Amino acid sequence: MLKVMKILVMLHALVGGAAVLSACGQRGPLVLPTTPASAGRATLPQTLNPLHSPPKASSSAPAPSGQATTPQPIPAATPR
Image 1 (cartoon, rainbow, N blue to C red):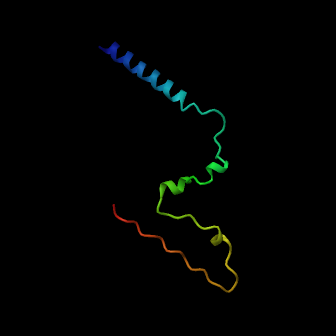
Image 2 (cartoon, rainbow, N blue to C red):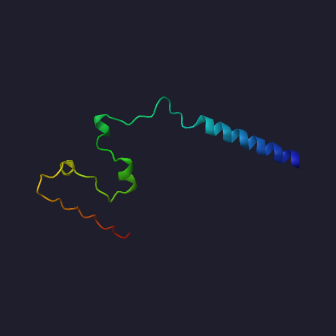
Image 3 (cartoon, one colour):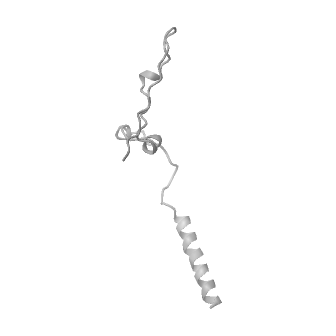
């Protein structure tokens, strides 16, 4: 009985090692896509928190001197 368990453990280790070494098959370095087709896709923070809206391009510019900026309200989460 002990020999059977040893064989099963070794087989499981070999199969697991082969699966880890085969990974996903991605070759070469991982890069972010920069094609025009990928411009409208969601980023990782957008997919993790879909209620959060990204900052607008015009709001990233500094405010003119003498004018205070008002913080944008965060929309409340709706119950599902």
